[in-house]
Length: 209
Image (cartoon, rainbow, N blue to C red):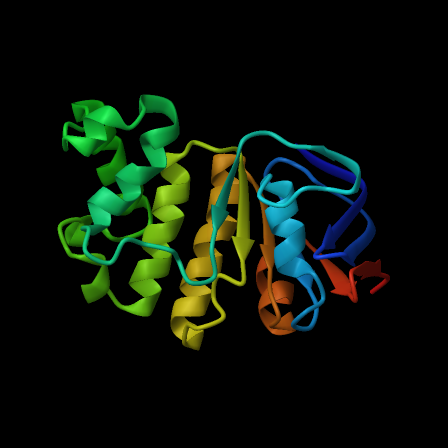
């Protein structure tokens, strides 16, 4: 599903990733561990096509990226934030006029229900708790119908209970949805609990565990 071969990335003239190679299979959760500044975010952004590669090869399907700070529009409802995930396939003019297709509205509600937020669909994002916002971000990723989910420190700012809930959700999406999940984490105990495999990134290089 995802294959990275010899990936090299430089930012502002400084090499950040040095020949990274990895693979993630359908239904698999792979955790990337490492200290701050190791290159975890850059790796995910490069796979998502948001950062150019200097060298190497990335073979990946359509991807959805869950950001550390969820990146929701605070004044929009949870449902409208999730609907944003459909923009890539339906265009912008109808949403600009708030003319979301009925099928897309129904799918957004199904995605919210999948993450346990069906009852809060009409709630503004800025009135959701941190854990609820992160689950809404996962629902938006589901709305993109991407077979590869990339999650950048998705539980860094959450309490242990909400962190476990979000990672359990990602685990379920892989196990029962057939998605590939690559998640950056800095909590080894959570990686051990929810990931099939753990990789470690230090100073832009993958290290043997």
